[in-house]
Length: 409
Image 1: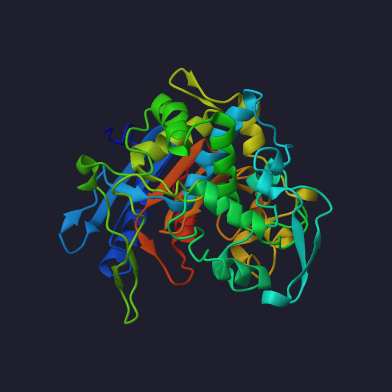
Image 2: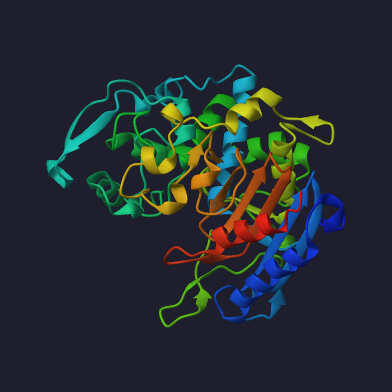
C-alpha cells in the first residue's frame, strides 16, 4: 500500500489556496446535504500534489471516514488503462490499430449493420468493411450498450442478456462472442457511440498476449508503475479500505447499492469497467500520461504513442456532440470535446460546458469518479466518491470551474 500525500504548498505552483478552500467547501455541502457519502479530491501541478482533501464517509452505516488509502470502484476509468495495455502491444509490433478485429477474434468476421425493424423483424446488411482495433479504441465500432433504450440494437443487447454488458455467469471470451453475434448500430468509423468496445479490446489483449487481462495489467502496468492497490479484486487486507457504493434513494438522499463483485477474482474481467484503485494509483497513472509514457525512470510507452492516445481521432476534428450517435450523446457536456484512444480530448475550450484548457484529456466512471490532465497548465486532477446517480448532476462541471478559478498562472 502507498499513500497519496500533499507534496507542495499551492502557492508554490501557481494555485490559490483560498480558491481551493472554496472547492472543498462546495463539495462538503454535497456531503452535508446527503448527496454524497464522502469524497477525495487531489490537484497536482507539475506532477506534485498541491491540494489533497478527504471529507465524509466511505461507509456511512459503519461511520468509517474517507482516507487517503480508501479504495474506489473506478468503473469506466478502467478504459484508459485498457488502452495503454493495447498500445504496449502495438509498440511491440504484436498488434496494430488497423488490424481487423476478426484477425484476433474470428467471431467478428462478416459483421452486419442494422437497417430497419426490431426484434425478430430486424433487417441487417453486411458491413462495408471490418471493425478495426482503432474503432474499438475510439468508440466508433458500431457496438453499443443495452442500457441506452434509444435504438433497436440496444433492445437486442437486452434480449441477449447484456443488461450489465456481460452475460450472467460468462467470462470475457464468452461475452465478446455474444457481442459479435449482434448487429452493429452503424458502419464502423461513421459515428461515435460509447459502448462495450473496451471489453472487446480487453479480449484482444488476452489473445495477443497469451495472458488473462488481470495478469497482463498487473505485470505490464500496475507493477512497473507501483500502482500497489489497483486490480480487479480486493484482498482480505484491502477489503477494510473499500468504500461502500451508493445510489440515489427514491425519497431523496442516497442508499447503499450492490457494486462490482470484487471479493475474489471475477469470472468476467472487464476492460470497460472492472477495476478498483486508490487515489495513489490514479495519480501514478495520470502521471504516466502527463509525462508522455515515462514515470520514475520506467517507460511504458513512447512519447509519440501517448500523444496519439491523447489527440482527437474523430473525423474532420468533430466533437462528440456532432459525431455522436444521437440522441444518446446529444448533450451540452459533449460540446467542444473530441475523443482520442479511450480518453476525451478538449478541442474547443470556448465551447466546453466548464472551463478547460486546449488538449485536456481524461475520463470518468459511473460511480462519480473522474480524472483529467491539462497539458497547457501542467495540471492533473482527480475526484473520487462512490455514488451511481439516476440522472446527470453538476459535480464534474462544478469541479472543473472551481479548479480553473484556483489557477493563478
